[in-house]
Length: 322
Image (cartoon, rainbow, N blue to C red):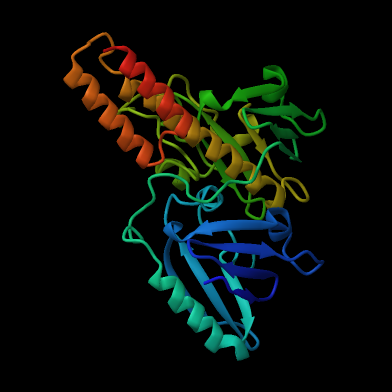
């Protein structure tokens, strides 16, 4: 479309295959929007588009992302307030006709899988490095590792005994974020092998039973698998968690952090699964078997689960077995 629609706090730029959302900067703009700055949302990441009446003479154009398409939405797990929803564009009521036009244009560009969950993230996560100050420690993420450095004024005895923590994303299965605007908010990492542990009261019981906000299931894990060790029932006792409080871990800092970690965990899981799937049965030199494995590798590449470099490298390895 190549057009621009300016609303309150944001501007949407419509391209042939995506929508570029640019957020304004200002004292009235939600801090989360200012933190995100801009986001490119492919049409393939959307499930639907709505236009509804807003408050005080406004209309709201909203693009609804597919489940699993956006790491920020996955990490938020429905906890964002309407005013902080990055997929809402609030417009003066006199622009309703124009907004309806763009809504129709977007609906016409939704993909055939719009009603289905996305198999991978299609919207980019906020970029590392990043950090924020929690009540009991400082959390930092460099793109490969998450580190927690405890504050003596806020950290529990259990965390002080465990010492400062560093978690490579390759050793994580997911991340749980509970909004600091809710009671007992926290950011909690899920180490591999602990996916089935259910936190106790005060640690998001309902979310834990369903897998938890942003939780990534361990590839190949059985439903009845037992955790390697029990997770502490409370986040303030868990060395793999930092807790929020008044003025600590605000949404605009802790949620992008959680989304970035979640995207990195999910990407590493996909990359780890590729060699096992592609190179299974290595050592067999039957040309038909090699051809079948190259075909499967090509399917993974087309699905976006294998990068161009990974595809070229693995294909060369397979051809070398002939």
